[in-house]
Length: 125
Image (tube, rainbow, N blue to C red; front, side, top):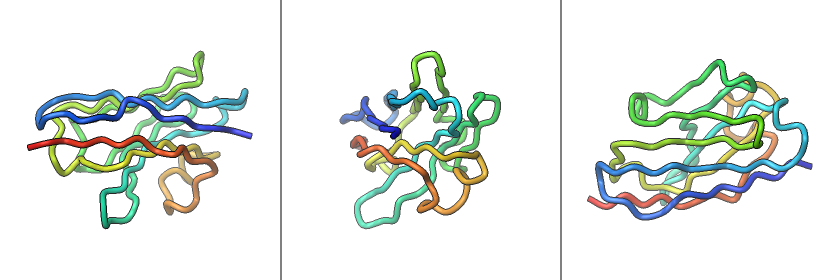
């Protein structure tokens, strides 16, 4: 069983930064591609960023390119999302997800193998 626990959310002013962390239990962390998704009030959950099991490949939605950086530390079973130059439209619950392949990670949202419970990010204007 794999469990994902997010942390690092909070309230920040526009232009500020936050770093989200996702701690993953289980010894199979390295087998999974990891990703971050978000869901704003009244909207569907959307893909934000993904990273391959080795960390060698990363993917982002256009709206966060140049502002967000996804990374992972396989030694401590943790994936991160560094968010800079935050905008009010980034306000959402951010979810960590694991998928057995990067292809699945970039596919339909309901194709993920595991989800965290989410952490709220609020960006004030």
